[in-house]
Image (cartoon, rainbow, N blue to C red; front, side):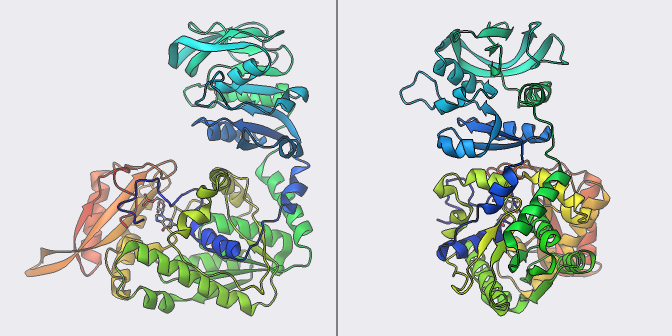
Length: 558
Ligand code: XMP
């Protein structure tokens, strides 16, 4: 399936900007039949205050997890049909049942494991989650006479058992539901109402709460306070999920897991592998060897800066391989974007293998997998590796290397990774780096990748980045970069006619790269970028700005 004809969602996900590196390695590991180690997880989890969110498929489920983490409480988002024993092993302090598209009276509607009601632990059901509680505890849910969608004013009563502590008697909330509660379970009573929902919040007066509205969305301005009240006042959590606690816990677990073993990690210059490697380095020092493959497709000064950080500032043991020539040979004459990706992926694994085998017996491989990738991968077809596996027919790490995975960021969201990275003392420049694709500049050069064309793109890209940074817009933009097209056009410079390349500038805003909007950069900034590129980069005489959003375009041009 080529990109242009693909109607499915993008195979390239974005939570981790090192996804490409980790996916290549994961493929290699899968081909070798390796398993991820759960030892690390079980050690550190035993001590955590954990909230379990049962996911019934709401588009907002992840937001619930984000909000809970923002309250400094650890949580996991797991499918509603996760076996009870697995849930119990997480030693939850409470449960949240998410919203979802189903109706509880549908045949085979998803329900919560019945065991949760026998635990005596606090439960908060949101929207569909509230209907699940009602239905499973003997109440009645019926289709509402009209759907309630959008803002509503919630009037709370006097007694909220701590759920509405510190909040005014009336607050704005966000509703999105069709079904409604016709009869409450025994011992339940309404705690709050809206104009259309007499039972907008219900409770058993002990530990079970149902909320008809969505506290996790920004349209419920006091939603986070409600969630925090549930966590602190009802579940008794203490908000101990902080970067420094995470670092302490994780470092201790890694030490315990690795013992005297030898560990390798592929660095990409991206924040995820950097934070993962730094954590592991804090735990086991020089038992960790990092391998940094320069594929010759990086931006200007990128490899040097990253190396400087790892080697000189963090004193890590880094093997630096300048494999530029190997990659450029593989890319010679190649213009098809997917072919470029395939060849870069294959070569990466080969270079990595070549270096790794020189180290002799290695026991562990560090990867910068993040939580959204873990959530994505609950269905096999969504596995990070499957997403690019179809496109990369890569080999496996040699059988002599029996590697166990260490994924210290496996339960972190990107913003948490950044916080941890800053606490670990990584430079802001690395922590706030915009995502950069694994195949690098090769997919920002339309047509053949040659040293000359790479240099043109690097110089143009440097100007775009410098100007965007100078204008203080770098962090606001999801990505901003230059593309070298294969179009040549006529220009005039002084008394001479020129016939040179067209460079495009792309700057987008986005939350997750699934959708993106072109950034409304100030005209003056665009003018400076354009002027500087045509004046300073030889071989370019025209600059255009890409004003398409995604969809229908993609962020990258290839
Ligand atoms: P598109 O171009 O599909 O890009 O809108 C979405 C996000 O993914 C990044 N991207 C890649 N990342 N390998 C990667 O590791 C790739 O082949 C790749 N292609 C695109 C892109 O930079 C954007 O953040």
